[in-house]
Image (cartoon, rainbow, N blue to C red; front, side, top):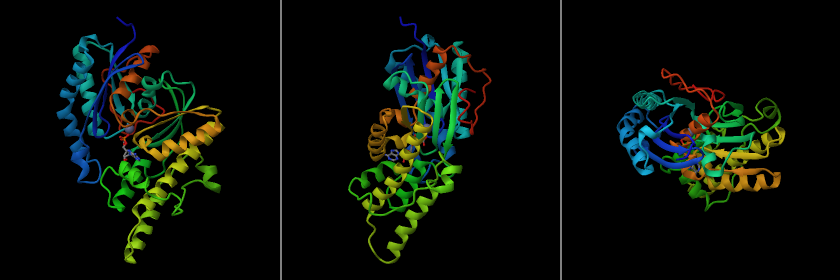
Length: 348
Ligand code: KG4
Ligand code: ZN
């Protein structure tokens, strides 16, 4: 028997019902039931639909995780759950389920921050996190630059998006280009056939006074509007829209700003490890440009595999296992959900 903590993690902040089991720094299983197809026809996640889907998926997903990992619930050392940020109703399903398990099994519960979990998951992929690590989280719900001296209790926000999240911009531009939801992977694919310098789209918050006041913040709504205008102008003139070139040029504008600011943050905070997480970390051009610029700057790049970048239960279990290993006190059984939980609060 290993004396490393065995932790089950539950994630329900958006449209994925994730249940993962981690022993220490080893991932045993990561099961995800997604309701993304139920939202596709609405072009975005519908909170009530997500909550109901979590309710239906929760018990079967926990059972499947335990079966596939060969773990009995009574062998767990702790339950870990996302307490925020995220959709209020969706979070409630996960936290209520975790509380029921903790109470019935007599196990400690850790209510943890979704964003810190996105960082912690890389421990099961690439080993212990250097302290500090710079983390850039880019998904449909968040775009943040974080300085992380200790993922279990010290996460500092350097900047975040002022408007749309990076993934949200991909999804909206995909819609303008007539590509399906969620649009990120489709834009990525279309862009491979396109010319990324065909159209010079704006790089938000990268010049003059913006760099003084919003040095590590992002803004993608101006870019999204610029793309929509560019496409409309062509359509009104009866011209065909060069979808691949628009996708490639838009994508370049996003990943140029992301990688530029992330590496500037590394330089100014003297950090030599950059971790990229969240659904947009699956983007092929973001990975390539980050690799190129990190190599040039002497920064080691860490990107979890795509399945661990998108929302999942393993990330919550990974952070929970770190909490136990570092001797952090569990949360109260009455722990709340917090749909706007600040990124600096690792534990509820
Ligand atoms: O982390 P995630 O699964 O869920 C949220 O917490 O939002 O991220 C989903 C987002 C969507 O906006 C999706 O379009 C985007 O990640 N995404 C991508 C790619 N794959 C997923 N964006 C750009 N390129 C991709 N290859
Ligand atoms: Zn997420």
